[in-house]
Length: 441
Image (cartoon, rainbow, N blue to C red; front, side, top):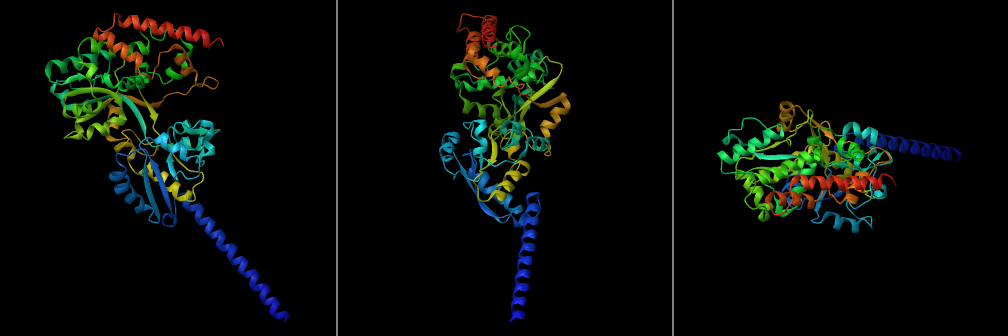
């Protein structure tokens, strides 16, 4: 009897030891998988919610799902696209059912991000591998990675430039204006298309301010401590003087009041338009209309600054639902999408946020030929966050809005009885009054 009890006790001990050892082995395997090993063992069914209703079937379902499954065969991915992304996803976030992988909506305050999303790593650690992660970081922890890093400049038709006899990318403002004149004289193309009627394309010009200033510190760090930010010689004066001059010198469409955005993309692709000021996100949209997509090129906005910078800006950040029941599979997809899918270049029109991913060939060549440096705009100093926006709102300038840009175009067309210098003086005075009020508070 005692022998039987002793045997039973020993068997129980051995069973417990065996289960513990197996558990440790499984835990060790799980740790390896999260570091990139054991991909065949990563499993689960996840839903990825995106904003690209235009390519959710043709690209995400038909291409990405298959490519991802080549690496992670035991993960089933469902894609869902929302037309009004922010408006449709935020109500669902009142529950725990808002997919496994999704884009962080802009409507969510930064401080509330940890309530909804899984931490991905420390800001210090993640910044070594990815660009733009500081944008959705809270208290030193990263919760999202940009799906694309975009940049703004001039999208142009290479064949039109060749036909006009332009053999190199214009670097300075004078060279750019000369190039537009050559296009008008030697081709049938519209030199520069404003897209005035749509309105929002005029706001794209502000995205070039780092290039024009030749200083990534200018917008968020230096400008708030300067008066007369629209006086001759300042970055904003020089930038929008180009907008005024191209309209004044009839280097744009005949009637800016009747432009059409959708039509303009095809016109640029066909060579009926030579240039448009836009973010790189528009490049794939324009290329789809071109018989030869390689005819569509990108150049930095012209600048008289000594240093040549191209500012990068983050698109939507991809994140993981903190309530997901398959976080390992969700993280596997997120990492694959950012680092291996190719979305950032082919469909996002920019570059990957992952520093390990090489630049696209054309941009890499442009960086080398032009002496260009890709940078992130320097964020505001601690204690000065949001001050630029506060000053802008008080001054009623609207750096990223269309009203003052439309005013400049209308003045250049002769529809307003004011010159560019009249407008510039008014905007400088507005800024100075806002600074006098806010900086003294």
